[in-house]
Image (spheres, rainbow, N blue to C red):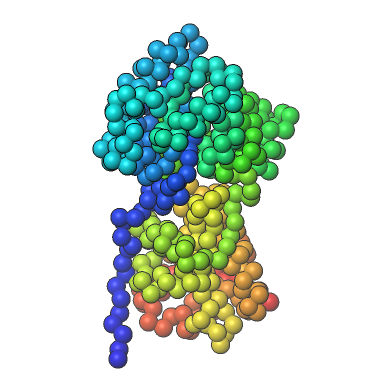
Length: 404
């Protein structure tokens, strides 16, 4: 019985980027620290409120610490925060899941004056007594203690993630390029005497010290971003700041079944952006089954590629297909790591060479930097071109890496 050709389709969008991150945060605790001044700026409380509402509805517990500027009384600041935040956070869906956040009096018990927070054990106790009944604790603390207290609370309670929201946002290199990820080794290098000053980060040394301390205390990841970029940092692949992890920031592993849904959406994204050609579900499945994923930190996929060999077994040749890294990770070396992993696999299989095809000039230059040379379409197996679109073949760039 003939098999009917399958049209190229995209995965449904009802379980997209945000849902993957919410799934990661489900039943975990996040700690978010920001200054009250930033919250009072245009859209500040609205941004924070929207993020908290989504996290609470997701059954994620959240500790929020807000730094109060010198000269501003903490009790009055707490009343101000409660007025601005309570109605935005306690939406109907959250109230259904957590009845204790619904009433005005009950919800008020989620807001705590921590002041100078000189007694850490008392603060930890107050946090637990609040969170054992409610999904949210909002504490105001003197601004000069904000980062230190956030690090101590997050570390002692070993929360899933610590987010430090600061006006400067994430870390940037001396030439101004954003640094999306840093692991403990790179962070330690940055904190050596004179390094932060050389990189123009002297004013952020205290923050970087706190980030490293939190990671070493057991916090799985720390995010540094601006308050207005908070939702993008937590819920999207692009992010808006810098993600810190303890281990090597990027691991290349063969994809497993539990990864397929998320990676399928990465592939669909690459198709929408024009970096990858449209594929049928069966063709996408081939990438997933033969693919490698670049995983950042805990469950953050940065890119994907696959080594296709089945069609070229008689020739002992492989093709790299579906290579894509999302915008946030371009320039972070992720694509190079994926290529290196695919080439290692090709050598282990005893292949003579590996090739790749692209219509993108930038992709051609990328492959050239990793040892591939431009060849004619006739320099790769004829099986590649069976049923291939003639017009596309006339424009395609073919690159080859010999392994012998």
